Image (cartoon, rainbow, N blue to C red; front, side):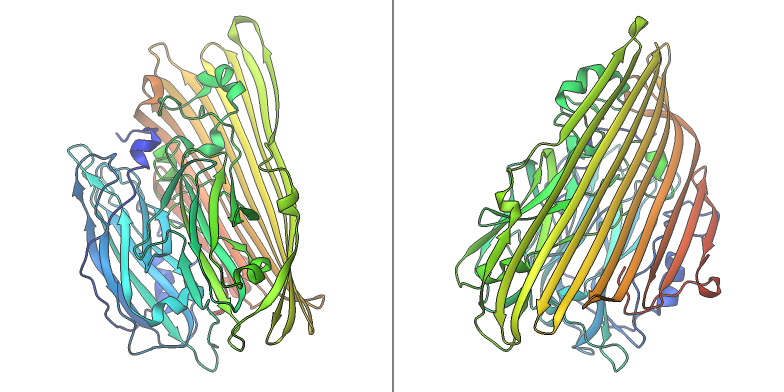
Amino acid sequence: MLAATVPSHRRMIDMHHLVRPGFTLTLALALPSALIAAQTSPAVGGRGVAIADAPIPRPAGTACIATLYSDVAFDDHGDATSRAAKPREWTYTPPAQCAGPWSKVVLEADFSVTAGRQYDRTVSLWLKGVNLFYGTTQEPSAKVSPHWHVERDVTDYAGLFHDGGHGQTILNNWIDATRAGVIHGSAQLVFYPATADSNAALPADLAIGLVGDNNGHPVDVQNGNETLSRTLTLPRNVERVALDLIAQSQAVDEQWYMCIDDADMQPTREFSLGPPNAGDPLEQCPGGNFREVAVSIDGQPAGHAPVYPWTYTGGVDPNLWRPTTDIQTLNFTPYRVNLTPFAALLDDGKPHTVAVRVLDAHDFFSLAANLLVWRDQQRDVLTGKLTQNTLATQQTDPPPQVQRHFKHGTGGTLQGEVDTLQKSHYIITGELQTSHGKIVTRVEQHADFDNRQSFDHPSKDTYSQRIAMHTQVTDDVRTTTDAGTTQHTHHLEYPLLIDIRKQVHANGDFTADITLQQGYLSKRQRTENGHVSFWSTLDNHLVSHSNTDFNAGGTGITGSRGQHGQQSYRFSDSLGSCYAQQVETRDQAVVAVESGHGCPNQANHLDGHSQL
């Protein structure tokens, strides 16, 4: 059987460097959107990967494909915990038959892993030092060789694709006598030329990876002080700037949302499911359970980003994720931080350092970040100033509020609660003199984090733990010009509920009844001079359950039953898109698929201009 809670540094740290040289690009007709959707739709009875997520909306018309690499084997032999596998390198050549401009560019990748035993692995794709994709892989089972398809809208990065360059894929998969699962992968870029019906996109003029070299790779930070940073001098006509970032939890911090404050570790130690990991059992990682990304420019606070509580396919209990993985597990969604108020500072012609760190990180996080820059094409030098930054005047890294209550009874019984709460708010404003007049950009963020853990040990052999975490973030960006004010509001919610009932047997083995509920809610709205001109809503939620037998100490799984789950994905927007899909599984197979419910004509439809 697969180990259920193998130490994260054995399961996740080993996913770092990998890729093989020698792959050039070919051109072909792109598959129609309907066919792509059909290929990725789950089927009743299927035991491979089955997720409800929508495909990237595609514009009408004929597209062309630039193949990055085909059927590459990630099969290095060696220690499964090593991180020294060779990246698989490839060469990108622009698609000669559709040189641009493009209305949309989509990265597509396909993966598979042979049946047997293998850890989940991190995979990332890089072109000219810029990250194009980041995710993890599905763990196989003894008889199932899963395969899966992922997509990412990379239209904002289209400026990268006009010229060729070096790329690499990092998938640190290792083969040994025990874990022989070989992972294969292919990837391509799909270009949709601009037409009268599909206008040319306005991608960033520059896309720059913070890693600081022409290869690109994740950068690990072991604590809250270490950073991913890069010092660079930008053109003097930067008008807009943003940072796309991913903060992936690994090792001790893999399930950071289950960690506990140092003061509460001892009374809750017996509730843990897992074996020691660098001395810290699962749910017993110290330092508490608040994590947040902080961005700075030249040491000045420039923005915050929440950390999504991804659970990988070896996380908590692998039986929870067959065949439906947790939300975004195979394909992380980057978080975009708007840095436009700092444009005037970046336009001074001097070098500046952009840095990213994870507050309260504890062994460890892997980071990827891309700086996106839009320039004023009509003026060589822009001037302005940063007029407000309340984040810079706040207390540096204020700790969250921790509230606790424990009641000890006779015979070692225990009831307790530990609540971790954090609220934040900041406003950053800057102004810029451009070729089309003065622009004032105001970025405001409200964030609310709470992690509430309850513990109940009513008798000698029974332990119940419940973790209810909810992260809410609202980013509001207002741009004021002589023509008026445009306001973009993005509201995100990351709900997470984990319910564990643990029954310990006389020999030290135990059975855990586990239910995990996860959600991702994204609401966007654009208003122009007070009138709503666009809106979209994405609601993705999942519930998964398993009743699993662990050996003493939680070092392995000896049996499992009662697996069932359901994922529901729904997207709609003011362009007329409506996509609804629900997948239900039982005993590690798909038992029901429902598509289009609640959409017009009970059918899914995605407008090519929509963005998920």
